[in-house]
Length: 226
Image (cartoon, rainbow, N blue to C red):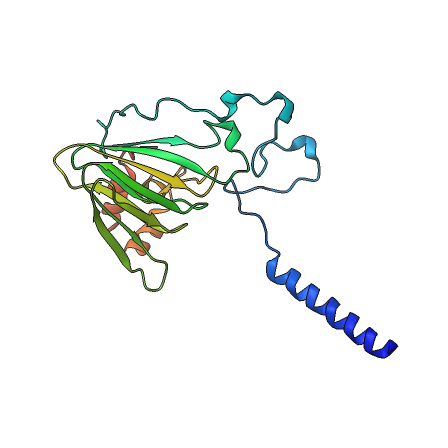
């Protein structure tokens, strides 16, 4: 009986350990990186935000106004993104959700970009949008759809995606994102507008184009519509 109980206890312990390995994981990052420091007094950024004493919280900590106001889209890409994340609503901290409004001029583009920390679900309110995303290597499959008012489309976390206003009138869309701080990496801006610049030799080989093309692209002003 003692031997059987020992084996049962051992099996239970091993199973519990195995389950802990299956379910344990790091929390999703809320910023690009977090360098560990032994001295907490030297810390500047944390993976998220410090929390206010709940007794001091106010209704305005959970409030944002003005998302009904159209934004100016007279810029090189013809679109403007209005974010509502933890920077605008402190009460979103730790809740894992945020929102954006996107305004598009006729033929306006929200350029190919990624959200490293969030899946995005987009709904069209006005206009006609051609949208799509590309899967990861090695397939790089392109999924596209033309959306009309009331249509919804999902962009999986971390994948390159875009929206283009194919109509002759302005377009408006709202999108929810599964992070309080989803982040955004606009591909062209990051590759050709990095500071300092990526070596032209690297980009020439990566894109298989003449060095003059790379130099031209790096000399451009890359507009940030966020």
